Image (cartoon, rainbow, N blue to C red; front, side, top):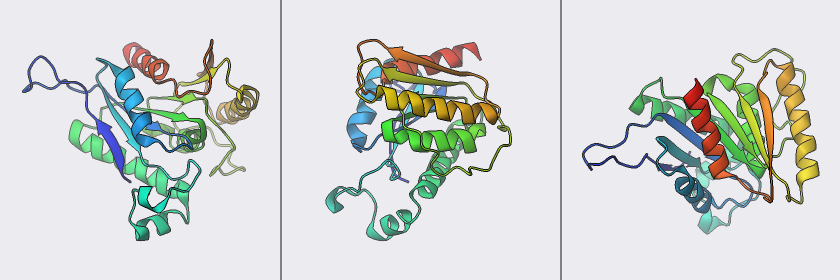
Length: 221
């Protein structure tokens, strides 16, 4: 798994970087504009002490043109035989790497935008113990990768918040998908499942709202 990584801004001195207080993993949508998506979160972060990571996932739809594919041909061919499995394993490896560097106690937050919501929902419902909270931004849900017969309660119930744009042309469909995903999450033991309709907004990853939500979770836990 390849990814963009941005550490927190340095402190008053170059020799004294800000100690991160959380890791935010942001899953992009089908546009696959990983650089632009990551940069939006860097701008929205401001002085928050978050490590930001945007992984180059392949389960978010679309097939990159060969010159734009970040993976070698052999890796890409193998990965695309099971895109979700590749992405789940990649996110797990990212978390291990960051915890090895900054300590196991560093909280991990997850957000998924649009088609990136498929992976975000799968990670939430299958590996909730990896995360301190999850924010879904204009996210899709179709149960991809989930075992439809599984009814066990979640190992760890984490807070989940969904953001939707009031003027999103896909709002009706996305709200229905949220209702389906929320029902499954409730059946598996999640209890903090909330949402916000952002006035005047369209189909957006809501970087500022997402990071503000994570900052509030961090502050109150």
